[in-house]
Image (tube, rainbow, N blue to C red; front, side):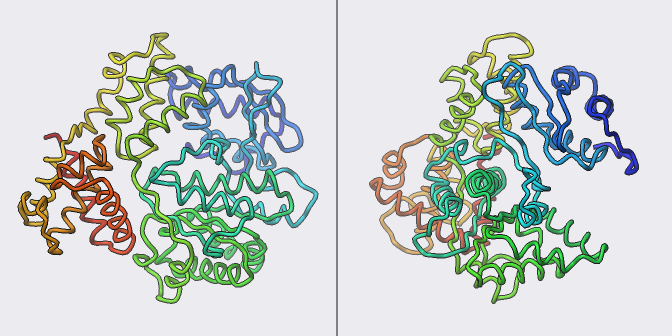
Length: 462
């Protein structure tokens, strides 16, 4: 975002939106401005809420997905009294689109304590709800446990800590924001604080500079549920790390709920042993890379949300080839829909192959199980026939499990096919091996690195 003078303040809503459009045009250029921002109209500014309208649901979804943060930043820069930004579809009068509410005084409640808590959070994305989260084998544990927390249910382990681990782009942030959205909608008196690691650091530093550290501590400790995204970015920064750990201990000791996300297991964090033990003592759940069926379900859910028709063979093409992350998967679908919408052309397999050529080329992994076995065997210095053998020697068992794991994640072969190629084993053996490797991945940084290297090798054009 281009820098905006801090002393600029615009009270009139229409003038405010005109000024913001000038900056959006400068930042994104004429082509993007005409395609998206030119469709947005100022509606009203009332009670600290800015209401904008767009002509279609698709345009609204695209703006929320790709440009809302920029709009939000400009709005707050020019008028800091605005707390809510609502983008509505003008033609849909009977059903108002959900608000995107900031935690800064979320719904202008009279409850002072709720206001104090809400000021701790960043904006919630209205798309990130439990209803919009597609659950499958790769993320079922994370989905079920976070939904239980949101609904005030006890977890089977009776833990009040959930630690969600996964790589980027698989839904950690979606689940955290879904918890916050559900609690706000259904439990008005419950105090929920949602913060990204960046915002936590920002607020901590700001509180020190403004001599309000005690107030910062008190606000955090008032939360019934604390949600922290990307814990790894706090670790290693002594001040913010210690503040989080103190808050974490205070909340959990008073039986409040804490949900954190991270890209590594608790044992791999740069923390003291006592803190690692506390985090690992909670419910630790992993979100794994989505398999083909889950990727296809995600795409189907997305086009349903957008009310847009896409042929099954096109969805299958994307699901089969875009395997890196759910975020990139949806990005490819958005690119296809946008291109065809602007051109006024039909979406078919040929159009998808042309428009998504760069995406497909970057993920051109038409892998066979034999290719996976060869790469894994080479990496571990064993022979393919040793991997497929009946030997239970540890030096063969691990590569065998990795082959099964990668074949399940990166190909469309059935469990029966994978087991057959790996020495005539049954599907139950494949399920056990994949589960065992999942457990080991949560504890071993070196194994995680090995898997990442193998996927990178397999992702290169053959």
